[in-house]
Length: 85
Image 1 (cartoon, helix red, strand yellow):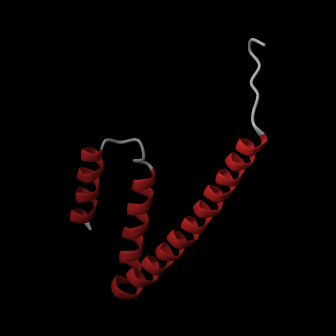
Image 2 (image 1 turned 90 degrees about the vertical axis):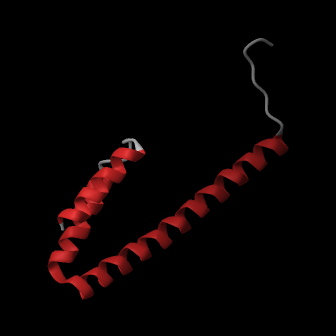
């Protein structure tokens, strides 16, 4: 039986259950983070007006483009961004 992979039904169910649980947890985390982002936008808009909201949106756009950057580069860019605004 070279090249054949077999799975135990109990193991397969456990794996599927764990994957489903991880997916549900990821969706819940996404909802919580989305709520925090909305709160952040409202707070910045109330405290700093349109210019503050524009700076926040520019920062979020910049961060989205730095996902693969080294940590030192991210810190430098974030520092530069907020020192400019």
